Length: 358
Image (cartoon, rainbow, N blue to C red; front, side):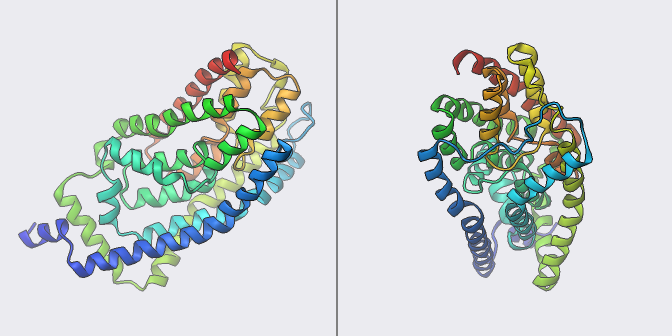
């Protein structure tokens, strides 16, 4: 590699810096506009309902716990689920595609590309304004990975969106109690930053490029990509994003909806077995943002113990079978298996703690 190439990789031309800032500003404006419409304003209004009525609505799960798996249950759940999330899902896919065409690979690598805790911390911090469920945040996490963002930062963004969602924490405090909120925050920090950082260490070193030659390659990719018209680049990115995430998303939501009545054996009540079962099924099942709150309310009224409800508090929002399938092309399989096992384990530990303090 020539001396000039090395210099350009480390010190972009002032004109290039201006273009980078313009592209970043454009992405931020689109993100703020979309989140304001889909998340921030609706959640602002919902917070008042939570404060005054101590509820944010009824459980999304069907009330007939004895019902057998059926196509009707699948369709009913999918309809209720997508009615709740479709705007956020569209926004997630839009932002996931725009990450790949508006945010330069060199800049993303500089900020979030290193396999260290700083990148993981920044990725998790960037998730806080998103307030998305795991499935709606998944396309953005995929877009970040495709722009060479480290596994730790991408995971922290993906997990932090639902787990550390500030709006959900506010709802939880008013509807459930401050004890649930503290439990969620404590274990949520471990899930967002601890699990993501450990997953980064587990991943192959090649997934987080760290050499000067690879930095120069990122610069070359930016230059090559910029030769195509923006519209073509964005439509290509959007099309691939839709093809990669939507089919698995739809099918898996229908599948889980069909088994919604049998996956949550409330009759177990409490105890270690119930904590283990609910930690596992909570990790698999898919819900909209903050839906764990009315689900926990409903199950508690049916006699479910504090331990299993705490396990659901931690596992239901974090990841799900659909969101795992959505990111499967962009994360190593061993990383996703580790994340799944870690979420189940933390759900069990959190359930045991919840049985003592809730």
